Length: 503
Image (cartoon, rainbow, N blue to C red):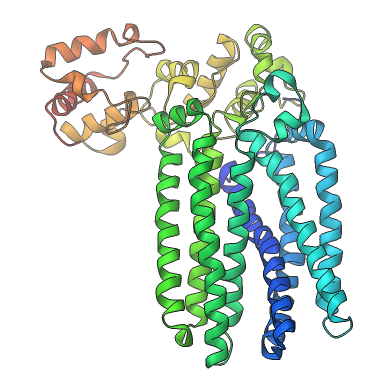
C-alpha cells in the first residue's frame, strides 16, 4: 500500500515465472554441475583418464558461461521484478532475513570467484589446487542453497514464526528439510542433463557412450532422490494448507499431476534413449531432455507458488500485500488512506492494490471475459465475497464504499449486454454460460464444490424458486440478477445437471 504500483499488461504470475523458472533451472545446475565436475575430475585424475579430463574442461567452459552469466543476470532480474511486483513482501523478507541474505550473498561471492579460478586453472594450477578450488566452489554453492531454501520454504510454511517471530523457527520451518533434499536431488539431476547436452556433441564412439551412460546415471539418481523427497515435501505441508488449495484451486493439483507425468517421461526417456542407445544420442534428444527438465521444474514451482494462496507469506501477508494483522484497521479505515501514491481515480487505485496483483482486465486471469454479461450488483457481490470464490482469494478488507468503487470500475470496463447477445447462443448453451457466470465461480462442475447431486428431482419451478432466494442459501451467495431469458436457460441447464447429464 505504501509503494507506487507497477502497472504492466503481463500478469504478475506469468512475468515472475518467465524469469524465476529459468533462474532456478540454471542456479540448481550451478550447484549440481560443480559437484559433477569435481567428482569426475577426481576420478579421472586418479585413473589417468586424459580424454575424460578434456571433456570436463570443455564442460566447465559451458558451465562457467551458463552459471556466471545467465545465472547471475537472472538472479538480479528476480530481485528487480519482486521489488516491483511485491514490494511489501520483499520488504518483510529483507527485514526478517537480512542476515540470511547477507550470508547467502557471501557464499555467492565465494562461489563466483571459485568458479572463475576453476575454469581458468585447468592448465595453470596443480591438480591438488584445482580440485581444492572445485570443492570450495561446490561447498559455497550448496551452502547458498542451504540459506535460500530456508527463506523460500518460510514463505509457504512459516511454522511457529507467526507466534514467536524467531529467526530460526521461521528458517527451519516444517518443509525446510524435505525441500533441501528435494532441491539437492534436482541439482544432481540437472548436472546429468547438462552433461548429456555437452556429451551429445562428442564424436560417436566408445568414449561418448561411456560419458553418456555416466551422465545419465547422475540424471536418474537425482530424479529418484527428487521423487522421494517430493513425496516427503507434500506430507510436510500442513494439511489445512493443501486441503484448502486442492478444494478450491485447480492449478496446484494440475501442476502436481503434470510434474509427475513429466518426471516419468524424463526418467523413461533417459533410460530408453541414453542408457540403451548411447552412441546414437544426439543434441536434439539432449535438448528434449532439457526441455522436459525445465517443464518439470516449472510445474513443481508453479504448484508450490499456488499452494500459498491467498497469501504471499502464509498467515502473515495476503497476495495483494495486505498484512493479516492489519485486517481490523483496513476494515475500519479502508484501503484508500493506506495508499501512499494515488492517481486521483479511486476505483482504479483500489483495483490495482486489492486485485491487480493476480488479475488483469484482458490478460492473465482476465476479468473482462470472466465478468461479461454481469450486472453491477453481481460484480459487487463477488468483490464482497471474494474469499468464498474458487481460486482461494483473499477477503476484500476495505469498506463497503470502496467495494462499490471497485465494482463501478469493473462494470464500466466489461460487456454488460445480455449473455445471449454476447455469445450468440440460446437453450442449454446459454444455460451453461449463465451457470459459468452466476454459479461456476464457486460451484464448478466436477470439483469438490460441485452441488449437482443436490439438484436431483428438482422441478423447473423448484429451481426457479431457489434462484429467487439465492442470497439466503449460504454465506456470501449473491442474489440472482440475470434476465428472464438467462433464468429460463439456467433452470433447464440445472435440471440437466440434476439428472446426471454431462454439461
